[in-house]
Image 1: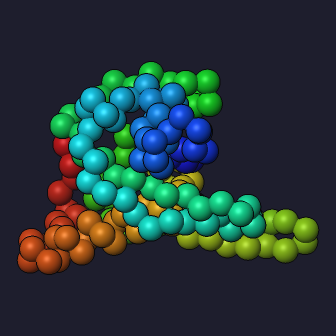
Image 2 (image 1 turned 60 degrees about the horizontal axis):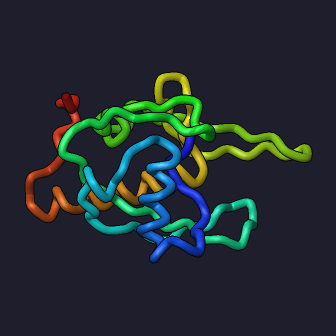
Image 3 (image 1 turned 180 degrees about the horizontal axis):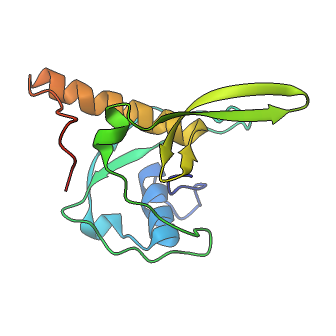
Length: 147
């Protein structure tokens, strides 16, 4: 489970342009036309030691778009945030490698585990959302599922 993304190309004006191009290529969504860029999250480094940084950008969409999957994508999922924020979908991903077993926090989304880099990016996003609600004293009512 992953979010759209990829490497910057020489023709990309900046990393936001990279995110927009990759999203268009992978899921057919043109963020320049149908999205409003809200900002970006912190850079994240993959654990496996690859010397790169992943820079996630956040966009607001006025409605749920129709997606057209590129060659790299087998399936997409729309996931309600409330169950993830409320802890209802908490899970653990167990990785066994070279005789060592490691456990990572995860979410179970319809039988698919979200863990690793995607988990870390979304965790930061959720912290920021909750921070915005807390700052506005609105709170987030996780008992109500988004429509």
